[in-house]
Length: 247
View 1 (cartoon, rainbow, N blue to C red):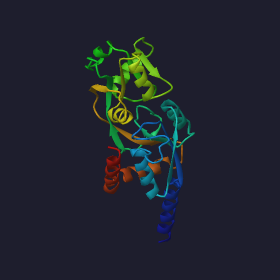
View 2 (view 1 turned 90 degrees about the horizontal axis):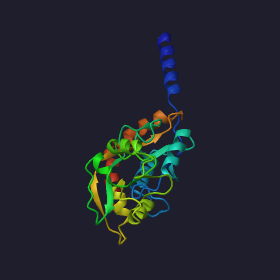
View 3 (view 1 turned 90 degrees about the vertical axis):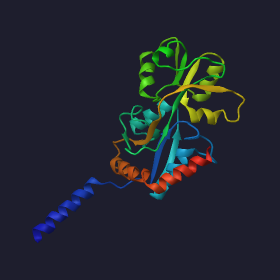
View 4 (view 1 turned 180 degrees about the vertical axis):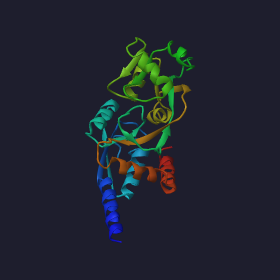
């Protein structure tokens, strides 16, 4: 019996040593990616911002979101200057620890002027246009490799500063013929505008996730908590309800 108690005590200590207290507050970086994550819009901070704020609040954790250019947010997360990224894909930040349960998904499309006749039909069709994109974004395997291979080409424009507004300006000043972004983001940006664009082809839908720097001692416990929370039916219903506010 005494030996059993000793073994049980050692096992308890071992379990305690392997688990870590979760933070009461966590800062995750993002970029302005409305309607998923919106900067300076307190009344409508974005679908995922609202959703994860509530999910974490239910777990006793306060969510803070820091906005930067996307590649700067990824760098800060890599360095541990913030806890991680609010929305990301493994291709964008391979050094981070990701949830296995997706937060939501997105669909990247090629955006052109409404009078354009061009349509996306694979890499060969891209060689005929001036393409705009944003540094560090993961658009999908089929175009990410093309952008990497043609970085520096005269018909490739990769923004380090700015975002979709700048790409849209470049489109209508004819600096580029098409740019890549999520279709919902483009529709949100232009909903009250007279500017008319069209979708010249879309890629398959891709999931995105929450990610944290694995060097934080609580990282694995936090990811386990979020995997469970993000697959909870109550939270999935909450996500759908929040989405309706942004339609």
